[in-house]
Length: 286
Image 1 (spheres, helix red, strand yellow):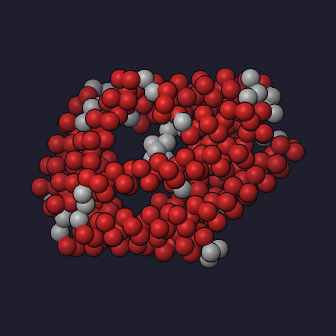
Image 2: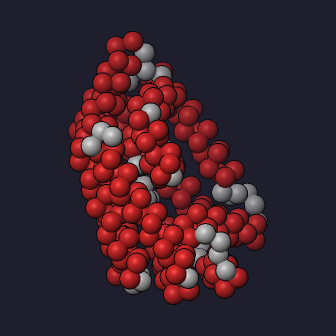
């Protein structure tokens, strides 16, 4: 989420388990989804240390959220995957990429709003010790983010890792990339701004706002709108870098699309259609 979504606490836990776990690969999708409740209970325990009746209530709300996700969200994912496959099969345009980004944002916000509805009452009942547990976990997350994205490393090393990540991603969708395609990925990695510091500041800002909301007991009053409108409070410089990064990434995707072999395109289209089929199967309870 995509969405971009960058929340490393309970709301993201709900959405990640129900969305991102599905992207672990078609063969693992059913297993991942059917164990999402276990994952969410574990994540809730990590962040908030729920005990007794609160733990039971959290489990009930997890099941309610996943029921909503199966009934409402998965059919929408299936339709989007089918549409994306059709667009990719005929060749991508800038309009297709804008459609994909906007459609993903709509799904992220719907998931966050549903998660907020299920968690707000529990969050308003948190004790100071539980909020302190959350803060410790967020601090651990921030250290991990800094390590994973090499915030202390030179720009050259970070761009090299960007190339590696994107080659892995593209080969997952396309199969082996050609030398020409590799050079285009390298060009993107060199051109796109290194915005990880901005992402780090954005994460920390959201975390501070979230903790202050919990301390004030205002989750029921504010959480849903705060969660779905997180982008509105970004610092201008980070928003500028983020947009420039997205433009460079989309430019790379368009150039790569023009160089796809028939086998590469078929590989990616099949993967999207397989996702759509699995989303429908999971939605039906299969």
